Length: 177
Length: 140
Image (cartoon, rainbow over all chains, first blue to last red; front, side):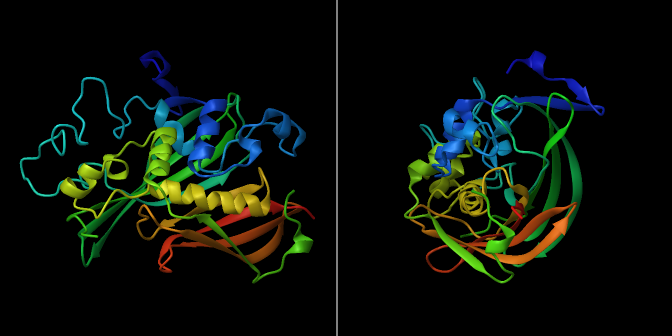
């Protein structure tokens, strides 16, 4: 998406435009191993109870594709921490295993509330705000810092379609598997 | 083909295999579709030599997505009111995952019948990888 699409404000926060596209929904359903035709077959979907191609329950996670600032996608011209000629494209001064903790943390929880089915053709606006933060001390990982993020996905009429609440965790030390 | 309140009772369980012998390529497919290209999930060199994991591993959201198929196959399309949970252990290539859904409650809210399910997805060693819940609208 273009920069011009960003910066729309919704309740005073930056909002992101997230169009629900047929090919994207089909690829997402394939990737989770779900052959349900309601995710790709328009004739089937039209005759079904929902009346249109819908998106799988976790599909809004793929809104990352439309987030210019999303950190887990290689950006043209920017350093990337995956391997190429070297084992990682980002050298860390501390050495050692910077990997999983390299500024991203791990996904601990995900929760969705559905207000209506999400359909191909919907154009959502996503607004994200921070939620609670809390800490725990783990035996193996040292201090664990949990942080909640709440994202509201609204349609063109401003009606809520999906509310997502994610919890990320950062560890003090890398947990050896 | 939605689930009817008449067809289920509290305590009843449903089970389905959601993946057998998870392939690295499926993890790559999920990375491409979701947009989460963290090399921990697709870059064996980075995952083993830099991050020191035994191999690449699945996105938690892939496990949740595979679990969602079992849930929507059970309750029907477009019937979910809520779905969530915690990622309790990592999922590696080669894993077989099975989801068990248990009917915790059937209740009426705003003249609609709702089912509350608890969900447990476990690997071939019985280790839980996802612990969650779903609420869905039922046919009368």
